[in-house]
Image 1 (tube, rainbow, N blue to C red):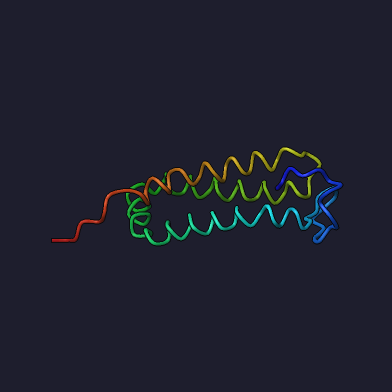
Image 2: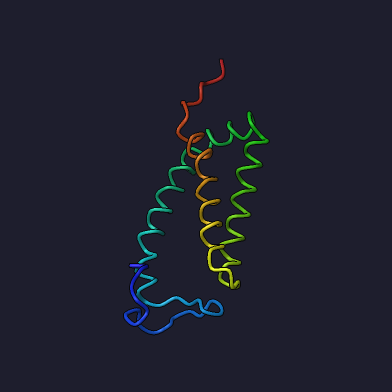
Length: 115
């Protein structure tokens, strides 16, 4: 859906920046991405105790992961205002890379009750 030629995209719904806009076809392509993201992040939220344990045991890794996420999101947003087209790909790669340690922590073993 996101690779449709411009002539088939329809009218611009939201103008983002110079050469960047969202059309109806773009919104249709974003819907499955948003649904998958909600499912992923709901799963992490349900396992937040494991993520909290990971943050407490490896705070430097957690700070690095969340810092990379913030930088990646910043690049994604800045790419809409920039003339360097590929910033979005760098930002997206950084944001996806941040999810790896968080998902590994969320998928870890169950918390053992204190005895």
